[in-house]
Image (cartoon, rainbow, N blue to C red; front, side, top):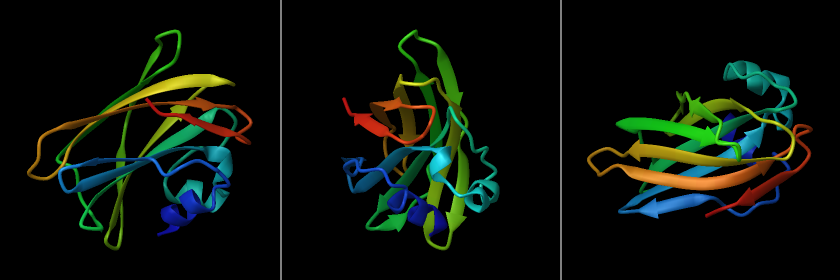
Amino acid sequence: MLLLALLVGSGSAHAEQKLTFDDFELHYAVIPTNFMTAPIARRYGLTRGEGRAVVSLSLLRDGKGQVAERLSGEVKNLLSQVQSLEFQEVTEGDAVYYLAPLRHSDRDTLRFTVTLTPPGAEPQTLRFQQKLYTDGTRLVTEDD
């Protein structure tokens, strides 16, 4: 629930980001680590600082957190430089989150590709792009 509070209270004014398929919802966000408090970052083993962000995913079915059977992802900048996303699973009560840190440059437009296999379902691919700033004060979302 601490991560949920972080997402809601992050100061970002963007629309809800989710992919709906079958009876699943995949919620996603990219959060500059400067939006996190030091205790939250420590709790999840994340490094705060300029040019650092975290991808957060949450898979729901009937409003309950689900554990993905498989999850992989990458992010590509406009120069086609690729970073693999290394997700860690976080469980808090009934909630399940996946977090992956990443680095970026100022005013970087990043293209994300995440492939996830929900329990008992076919793999799904999420693609979106987002512009990030190193100072962490602004957050711009540009969905495909």
